[in-house]
Length: 75
Image 1 (tube, rainbow, N blue to C red):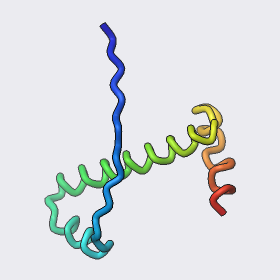
Image 2 (cartoon, rainbow, N blue to C red):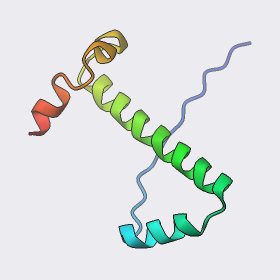
Image 3 (cartoon, helix red, strand yellow):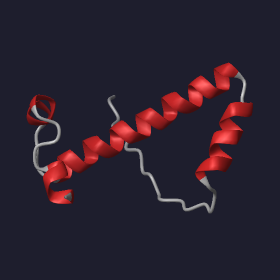
């Protein structure tokens, strides 16, 4: 039986400065730092994908021109 899983993300606001994050990352072991960066990139890519999908672009259209309409609306 195939089950579809849906990930639900909830926004969490934490009052922390960029400098504090940078210092914490610098103190991490290399393997932990690499995992953190991979997770951060995954979240960024997911955010971009969702924004493009929300604007009605198909995956093929997004791959051909990922910024079409997306950045233009923001500017």
